Length: 339
Image 1 (cartoon, rainbow, N blue to C red):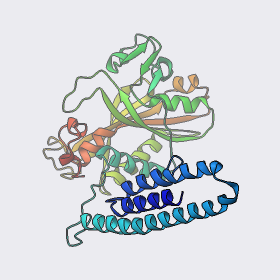
Image 2: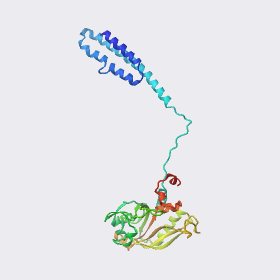
Image 3: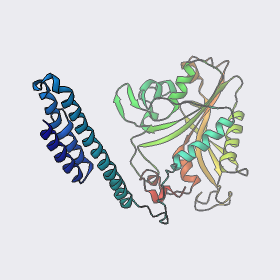
Image 4: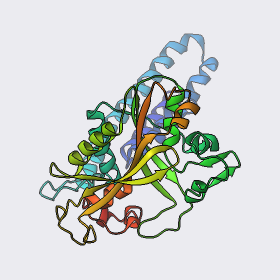
């Protein structure tokens, strides 16, 4: 037994010393000291040893195990140090090299314009409200005084899911939903994506964005509308901006108007941007039609209000002097990072 243990010890220590890496060392440890290792096999044969010799043999086995484990640990420390040193040499960092630049994201021109619009109207006490892009025909048309077969439906030709569900053509349905809640007074803007089956060109897209506003309260007049939008124009385009209202027709407002502002490029003298007129159209507006109020459960004899709609892309195009709407959606970083 003594000779066998001595042989196991010598062979194990020889193999341990010849180990080239930690993986090989672990294989040797398992082969000698593992559950099926050579030393474990000796322990399993203890039942065949005479009872009076078992303590002595057990001591010899323990001494052999301790010697092998000691050598394994000694070699493990050396191999670990060598591996660490090799790794550090391979991972040398030249601190004199220039750092890698982090490319940060940039807000889209539409987002910049929308945040500015929201800031202006929130500053005037308005609430920002959002609604569904897939809308019922009732909210998108009928509740806005546009019944079936109305000519205005042709002007706002859209994408139909079925005869009662459409992709909204404007964010006015959000206004109707808020009015139906009956919580008066109302001061809100409704920004969001809208859809119309327009051909893509420099000024049209089948998908674009609107910001529509609504005020409902007692004794609201057209003067309130004009004062509000005049203040908005000055905040957006500059203190010297003037506004002009031209009669128009919208089914959901009466009277209705389109609003122009003095060209912020030439100050109203005439230039390429305003096509020599000195004025630029930016939105449509009007007093909420009494029929629209009544359909939403509001008494038009007691309450009145005004509404307006702004094309967000139009504001971005004008503010940044962009001449083609398609540039906003081509995702060309060279273009977008200018803003």
